[in-house]
Length: 417
Ligand SMILES: [Zn+2]
Image (cartoon, rainbow, N blue to C red):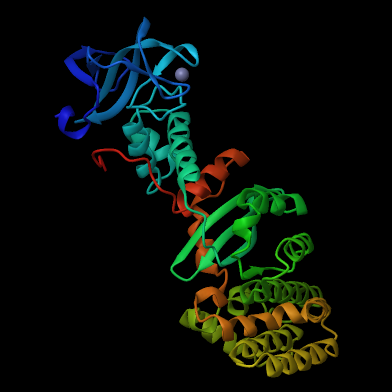
C-alpha cells in the first residue's frame, strides 16, 4: 500500500510492525522501516549533490498519515554524506521538505494543512492526536513552500486594507491582488504604518511593481503616502467599501449619542435596538428590522436626518462620468457641512480632501471593466473572520496566507484527503 500511495525514489520499505505504544490513544502504532537502495548514493542536504556515505546516525522517526486511526511512523537511520563541496553533511530525504528538521513527513504536513483549511487548528490537533504546535508547524511549512513557489508576475490591481487581529488595537496591513479572476492575499505585515506597507513593495520588487495599474485603499494617511511614492503611475482609488464603512461609523456615533440624550431627557426610547436597522443594507434587513426602521423614520431625529444623508450618497456610485459624479459629491458635502451633524461633517471634510482619489473610481470604471472597481468588499473580509483570535502575529500571518493566499502546494504522489 505504501509503495502505491507514497513511493520513495531510491529507498525501499523494508518491513513493518504493529508496536504496542501506551502513549497513543489506540495503544499501538505501526512502525515502517525504510532502507536506502544500496546502489544509490545519498543527497547532501546543503547543496543537493550526491556523495558517498560517511557514516550512519541513530534511527529517526517521522510521523506519517495515520491508517485506520492508528499512527504510522517511518523509521530510518540517516546517512551522513561526504560531499565534495560541503564536507560531511546529513543527507536530504525525499519524504521531508528540504531544509526542514521536522519529525513530521511532508505527506503528513500536507494532510494536516489541508484539514486546517476546513477546521480550526485545535480541531485538527484533537482529531488526529497531534499537538497544536504540530499542526501550526505543518501549516507553516506548507505556507513557506507556497510563498517560495508562487507566481507574482502580471499583477495589475491591488487593494490595501487593515484589520485588527486582536483586542487592543493591534493591526495588520493586508495587501490583496484584486484583478478579476485572480483574487488572493499577497502580503501580511504587522502594524499599519508607512513601514508596514513599504515591506510589501520591497517583497514585490521594483520590476513587478511596474505592472500595477490600479490601487484601492482607504483614507489612512500612511498608506496614501507610500502609494503616492511607490506607484506614481497607477490610478489610486479610494474604495467605495471604505467610504461607506467610515460613514457607517459616523452614523453609529450619531445614533448612540442621540439615544443617550433621549434616555437622559426622559423621552421615549425611539432609538432603542435600532443599530442594525440603520447600518445594514436595506435588502438585508429582516422583516422585523424593516418595520422598526419604517417606524423610527417618522420621527424628527438627528439620526434619521443623518441616515437619509448617508443613503443619498449611495447614488454617487450610480454615475458614469467622473465630472458629474464630482458635482454630485460636492453638492452632498455642501449639504452635510450645513447639517450641524458633527460626525458626518468630519467624513465630508475628508471626502473633500480626497476628492480626486474618490473620482478615480469612475476613471477606473471607464478603463477597466473587471471587478476591480468593487475593490475590497465585506465578503472578502468575512472570509478571514475564522482566522481571527490568534495570540501571536506569527500565527495570524500563517493562517491568513493559508486561507487566502491561494498558494501552490508541495507535490505529493497521493492525496490523502
Ligand atoms: Zn554538499
